[in-house]
Image (cartoon, rainbow, N blue to C red; front, side, top):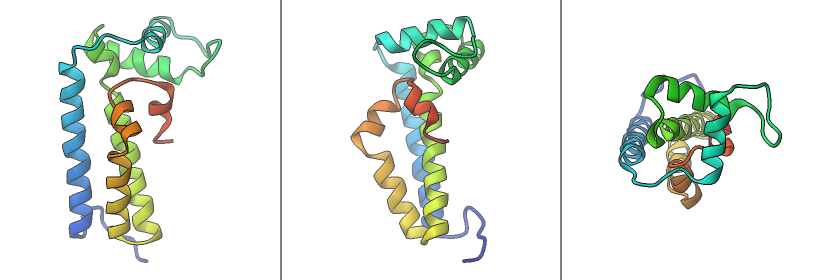
Length: 137
């Protein structure tokens, strides 16, 4: 299969629109959420306040991500969680590109829809966790 531009066909445009639309919706839900941090998120936030090369139970990436988001957006529940949906959107884009390259644009679209609407992904895109941050990798 030849290399295609990202938006070369209808399925690609639809997949990108779905990813962008759900990202916008999930960002709004994170910002407007009345939920407080759960215990792990609070622990990761504390780690983000004093960066280290590693922690007793997790690698340091989650702390670095939270440190970056709180430096940009302040210390609030929304600021701590704001990058979680972004990482899921990046993972969805990578899955689309991989499926399209291996099969075709229809397979990419089905892969994106399957990924984005799995209950675990829907829930984890609203909380900051070590798993969500590593999904794109």
